[in-house]
Length: 251
Image (spheres, rainbow, N blue to C red):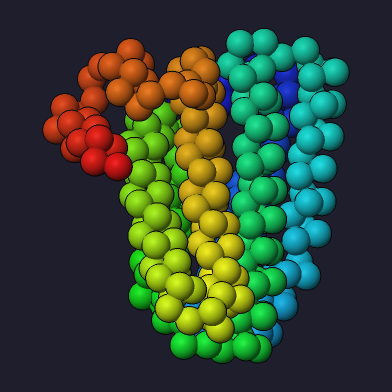
């Protein structure tokens, strides 16, 4: 799918400008998330401080894009795919802003963890979960950039693995806390970081749902992955569908 062309060149430029701004915001949020995770894994207080104090730029971009969308609606009265684009953008930037908030939380807890090291060793688990989260975030933004609904629906099934990793890490942290109460404070901080990572995965999944809405014109929120695939993507690869469905049934 591509953004449609209109008689008014200025209208084309306004829609393309909005889309480009969303991609810029997405790139900034992705960078902030990567830095927050690096600060967490490497106990980098300076990097954590940088992330925790730069969330304002993400918030400002959300406000600016929101205002641009409002002007387009007021002046152009968009319909059909144009209206879906504006609506999807408003929803996507909301999720991007919340991803920025979660990155800021990770950075804030990372500073405290770096100042108060403990024997709670969850580096391997956090590293694996972080890799999954960064992957789904990057691919979701890429699907939006290319307006690729087929890719978006494949990404939807990957959030299940992030949830499994979060559950496994939560059980490990619970064991640490039960064995030695001195671990509770830092274990909780790690748990809050893991929760933020899990939420970033959820927000990335939301972006994929908005891509499907934009391209297909169907609101697939609160709809099972099997139903989305069977109704809106009947030509999808059957083996991939079965694999993801089996993964979900195991959770």
